[in-house]
Amino acid sequence: MDAPVVKFQQGSDNTCLLSGAASAVAHLGGLAEAQAIADQRAVSMEKLDRFTFLRLFVHNSLKGWAAEKVTIRPVGSFDPLQAAVLEATVVLLEDTRGARNHSVTIAGGWIFDGNYQRALPLNMQSLHSCVGFGRWFKRVVKVMRIIPGKEVAKRLAVR
Image 1 (cartoon, rainbow, N blue to C red):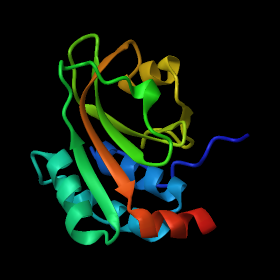
Image 2: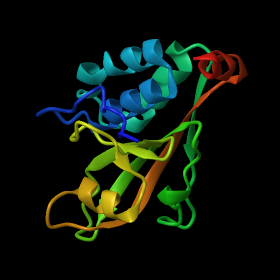
Image 3: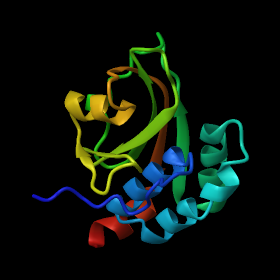
């Protein structure tokens, strides 16, 4: 099976959070919702807390979808390899050098990273690739779930 296309590329802008989230939502079948998220990339560049920006955007603008912040205690205890299949799980990655500057979104067993043309399989090697050349994935430090509500999930299941 071919890997899904990462529909919304990050390019030279620091839009990894919204690019990955929009691509994952598109993969789940929410094409209009994905475009709405992608359309907010330029606006998000002005925000200090893009996780909160995205969560509030989904809550206020995407009817039938929810965005939930996931509290991780202790920090680093979230296992991205166990992310739910039928939702988009947005994660902020930390590498072994302590950098926390890249987000990806996991959906359907794939990692949607706006730096890649196609989604990566959900495994440790792919997580290492996501944090950058010469670095290794250490842990997830922030998590948000984007979940289709019951009515939206029914609509998506029909596709």
